[in-house]
Structures are given as C-alpha cells and as structure tokens.
Image 1 (spheres, rainbow, N blue to C red):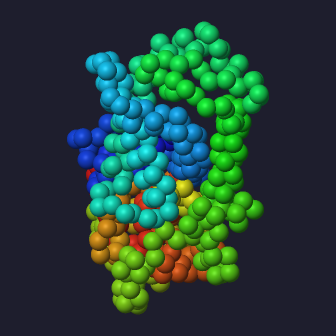
Image 2: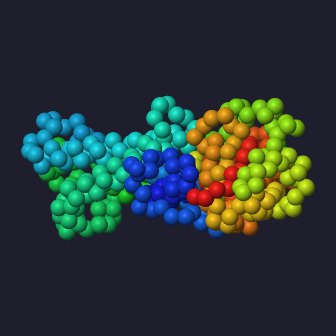
Image 3: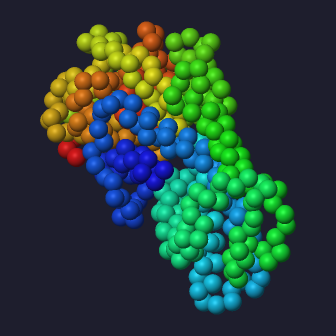
Length: 384
C-alpha cells in the first residue's frame, strides 16, 4: 500500500508547475520521476490496487485492533520507562492505522467530515503509520523471536477449538491472568477475517477492473456508472454543477486560448476541422475507480506545433472551472509528445457532455483523472 501510495504521489508530478499538493519543501519524496505514459492503464492499476487493498484489509486491521486495544486502557498506564515507550508506540500505531484507513475509505466514498486537506494529511499520515509499525516491530522483536522459537509460525493455526489454549500469561502482555474458555480457534478467527476481506474485495474491485464485477461494486460510489445514459453514460468525478461551469461559459463564444511562440484563439469548429485522432484510453481516479472509453480529438503534439512550441516545453492547462485545487495542471514534454495524448472533443462517437468536460478536455495515457482537465480554456506551452 505504501508503494502504490507513493506511486500515486509521483504520478501527480509535483516537480512540475503548480502540480504539488503536498508542499515541496516539506514532502518526503523517495519516489519522484517523470511519470510514464505506457502502459495506458498504469495509474488505473496502481491506484485501483491501493484503494481495493485498503478496503480489503479492514477486517484484518479490526482483528489486530481487537487484540491490542485493551492494552491502551490497562492501569496503571506504565510500570517502567520501557513499558511507557511500548504503550506510546501502541497508541501511535493504533491512532495512525485508524486515521489512515478511515480517511482513505471516506475519501473513496466522497464524504469529507473534516476541514483539512485530505491528500496532505493522508500523505504525512502514511509516514507516521510506517514509522509506528517499525517502532512496534522493534519493541516486540524479542517477543516475536521467543514465540517463534517456542510455538513456531503455523503451529498455533493447526489446532482446532478443542485444542486451542491461551498463550502463557506474561506481565504487560496481551493475555489476561484469568482467561475465559476460547470460543473460536485461532484459525477460525483468521478464517473469519479472511472471508470478510474476500467479501469486501468482491464488492470493491469491480470499480477498477470493470466487466461483470462492476455490477456488484456496491462500495464504489460510481461503481456501476450510468449504463442507460448513452455514449456519455460512464462515471463522473465532478459534475459541471459542482465545478460551477455553466452552459453560458461553453457556448458559441468559447475559444481555446493557445499560447507558445505564437498565440491563437481557436473555436471548437476550428478544432474539429483539424486532423482528429481516436484512441481507447482509461480515465482513472484517485478514489480507485476507472473506466475505458473511446476518445476523439486533436493530438496535443499537433497543437504544440501549431503554437510553435519547443520540443522540451511543458504544457500548462487551465480550466474554465472558476476555482479548485485541480482547475489547472502541468504536463511534461513526454506526455505532450506521446501519440495518444489528446485534447478530446468527442467520446464514443458523440460530443462530450457538459459533465464530461464539453467543449474540450485533456486525455493522456496513464494520467491521474484529476489531471485530465475538463472544460479546458487555455493551453500554454513554456519552458519547465
């Protein structure tokens, strides 16, 4: 999960323009590179894995919390400095785990009962979670070694309920001095959590892989799409109403402001008269869902030549959306020059709907959905 999260951060290319969501001078960025454009489904795969895995692991997280949370309420809180450090490490682990999983799942469900920036908080929270795991393992390493030496790794899972016995009592450990009779075996508890994880997997993964599983992706807010709405009937991240883009803003007076060494104002009719390209490309969102559609439009490389742009120029894209963190984005020179990178005007053989970005939107292979800017108003080619 950490790897796919870091890859998502790298996919935003925070080193370009104003793409950075996490402050550049404060970000821990071990993975930072020019995001590739192939395979086209790369971001759909990494982010779909991140979200699906996060939801799937919830039962296992709850099982672990069930075993350690009583330690947080033990009294006295600590009998020694070593025990105090262990208690603080457990508190940090539990707190960061609950924060990361809860905020991630609520973000996937588009519910934000907080005022902080989710991306920034989730990014820093991941590092706190990682540090707390490392600290917890370091403190518990003697216990882990002792348990492995005396009971092995899989031996406790072999016993059925009749042969399940509590672990030996240790002061400061997880076992109560007077344990009750077991009501479920260790393998039964693990199997129950595994079955719950499998169920959550089936109810989530369809939003990423599509096909028949999309119909049962009940945990995806846009899991089934709008299958009866014609060629534009596929998931929408942000509607025109939410973005405050009106029909008046995209009417007959709309012009694309194209700037490089030359400045041009192009109408939609002018763009439609240019050489068009059509490609099947995915739109993949940070919430984990993705959808592949057939997009038609003008190649960004052709617009770069029309503007007299240098081959090494990056592209600053601005939207008609009046405000919002992703009303603009910057694409690398490699993304601009890739054959499949489009200023899309049509989808599945018809004009884009307003909610899908009419009159024009960016579609680039492997690009995060929030950077596939809708309601494009301007394209500016400039040095990085």
